[in-house]
Length: 411
Image (cartoon, rainbow, N blue to C red):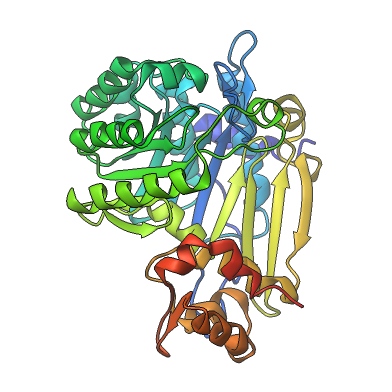
């Protein structure tokens, strides 16, 4: 399709895109639903055996310019319906976004800013894997506007890193973190997994202690899961049993709390209040545009109230060929009212602090009262606390979240 050719010309000339008619994305009561942008970069150096994300080992040269062009066409397709809300966050995930140069990331962000306004204090995150981003790139990413890094460390045990198919060792991980600090990043998340193959409690805590010592602002600490359609799913390695995994989690939570990291979500810990704004928008059932191969998006519309989900085709070549038109979409569907309660709870009940019933109404377009029996059943089981102002999961509810969520499924 050539519908985006005029806009592409304006981009090359450095001119802003023409204004579009505003669309109404407010929930009941008129409160605007916050908007984020997710950008997917599908390539990686090699596929990790546990990874079920849309990632493709790079074969040949990285098509940086062509892919950024496709992303911008895709964004224009999303904005054609009149989206005008400011972005509260941008998250560039993968795959391995740090395979892309700071020049390409800078061009992408600059062009996004021509199309959508940025809210004050916008959080702009780039995923980076040790071994794929040199120190000079970190400085370039920071200069381009990236203000938060999320680094996939996963372990500080070289034997574990090898089992996990990672391309870095522990020393490279620590050096990459130091380089990011030297480049001026003051908001860094580190990813760490536990219950790894053949791992014992002492090994899991040693990994955690090593990352705590680096003093990142945020830690994502989560249990390895053996997903279908992965190498580990097809040929499962020996991993700790459920009781050992739970012991790791409990001991780790105590270590994190003692070090000043507050748990605010099942696998998310922050110090100094540096919670992940982008992820919180997911968990609070906010809206997000999704561009890139395999990206998902969610959009709320008012009058009449509706929630729409879109997903792009996963294969990079197909996506690049069709980005900018409906042919790039693999699925597009409205979320039926009957499914919204479970979808909301699946996200909001991950938060330790829970949510206000008024947020449920704003984000789903539904009244709260029909959920009262399920909430009361969860309270009787000791899985929820509710005081009229807030609904929050207990420690038991967080541990058995799937069981808690079952109560909110339609009979």
